[in-house]
Amino acid sequence: MLKKRLIPKLQLRQRRLGKSVRMVLVTTIQFGGVMEIGDPVSQAKIYQAQAADELIFVDLDAHVGDRDTMAEVVKTAAEEIFMPFTVGGGVRSLSDFRRLLNSGADKVSINTAAVESPGLIDEAARVFGAQCVVLSIDYRRMPDGRWTVWTRGGKQETGLDLVTWAKEGESRGAGEILLTSIDRDGTTTGLDIETTKAVADVVSVPVITSGGCGLARHFVEGFIDGKADAVSAGTFFCFKDQNPMQTRAHIRNAGIPIRLHT
Amino acid sequence: MIAVIDYGMGNLLSVFNGLQMVGADARICTAPQDLADAERIILPGVGAFPDCVRNLKTTGFWDALNHEVLEKKKPILGICLGMQVMAKRGSEVQPCEGLGWFDAEVVRMTPADAALRVPQIGWNDVSFREGSPLFKGLKCPTDFYFVHSFFMKCANPEDVDATCDYGGAVTAAVRRDNIFATQFHPEKSQDYGLRVLENFLSWMP
Image (cartoon, rainbow over all chains, first blue to last red; front, side, top):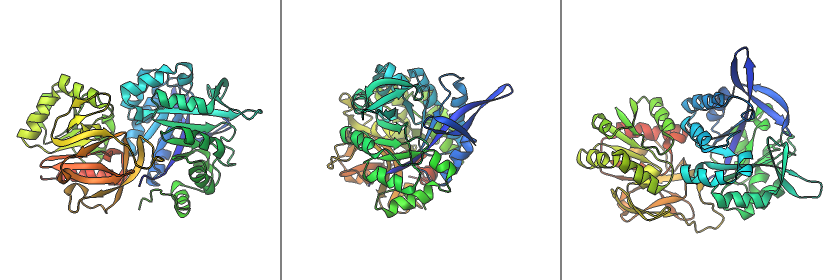
């Protein structure tokens, strides 16, 4: 039986130290409130030791900074960890895809560029295969109850309806959908179950949901009520006295098929 | 030397890193003549079946592989699309002839349970044939990591070395003579996957 997946998310920012630039692991709250945590590759190795199912790396500064820095992190990570990982942030072209895949990423996520030039989804799926194209969607719940898609790190409202966009992404060839609730990001108040389910019900590709995990129970809700195939969390694993192994045991006890690596 | 074939299809670095991790003298090979020096060959692959066939042919690896594997009997490990291309025929995008090492067709997965998604992405239990040298030291079943929409449907059950369940039995590995191939990604399956790579390195077919 295919297992549900637990995916730590590593958000990275560039930090300048004199002349050199390096990537540091950070957490965010509702896409702001950045807090530095440590070294991304060390943390990735810890997650591997704790048998996380996959990892997601997101470069929060790719739109402004030097992208080779991220490719270096990906390369180093690929030498150290033997598990699948997705890389995203600032991906705008097929050559961005190629560089990250050649550096060792298994999947590449696109967000802003997919909204601004949706044909990139089709092209990337044709050239690299749908399985490595992850459509990442950041959204907010509007006062009138609609769920709308936001780009540029949660700063730009697009007016697109979340569910419509997810379906379009799938039909263009995205192999997976990664949902992030901006409202819940870093709040530890629980996943946005209603939205996750609304998307999972209409697309046939796997759905990863994220934003809001603060308790092991929240993962269980994401799988059972939200019908997610995978749950991703950043803050949860960075601050709480929680790790993927403990969380997994909790999920398993709720009767959900999940890997227990022993 | 273990040759990892580079024919423009996918994530070679992970396979290379995985082999290094288990102590192999791995080399990424871009020219078909490099295979002559190889003791063992790895054929990775990510992407679509017809592109894979076309690239193998235009790079010259197609003929070199047939020679090294079928005539010189070198052990080969195919991974994901590198496994599928060993079938007689593929049906992804358009019908297309494969290497034909296995009497098999590569078809889109149609899980009986509508709740199962395609592609299959994630860790699934793999049950293997008792005594398979490639799964030596692993308990049955063991989780491996899959990412695929198509699978190899074998005409001869004796070619099937392992299966997983995804709304029906899905071929997870095939083995015949000196040819072994996995639908899952050993290089992405943490310790268990590295164990399969290690087993391949010591395999004496």
